[in-house]
Length: 160
Image (tube, rainbow, N blue to C red; front, side, top):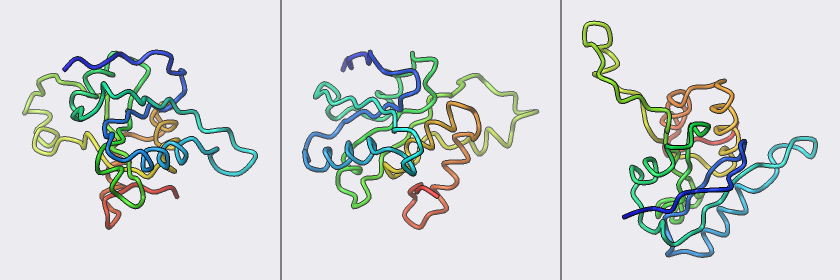
């Protein structure tokens, strides 16, 4: 499957790719939630780029990751998959794009080899902007967000 390239994404916009096309109402709810202004009236409008193209239907997380990984400015992509549409809180799948595939020397990196960092987690639409912004600014590592999501009883990162 050759996935279409994503063009026209703003430099600071979070990227949300729809891969499930079985629930139009669910998608509209997700799109509305991630597009809301973040925080109070004095805070900026949420910057998101929604990819709603049936060519992405059924795309696996690794396929989405591979297709968007050419964007060196992008550290995370959010996927609206079947689990997103079926869950009451519409939790998107956040995929880490800042992954190094180099061979690590076990002499120095055995702990990292044995317990690699998380490459994905679920997040509510309300937390997308915070995740994207903090990863873009390198304020927080992907793994820290993943740990916070895993600490939630449902495994979902929620806004603070």
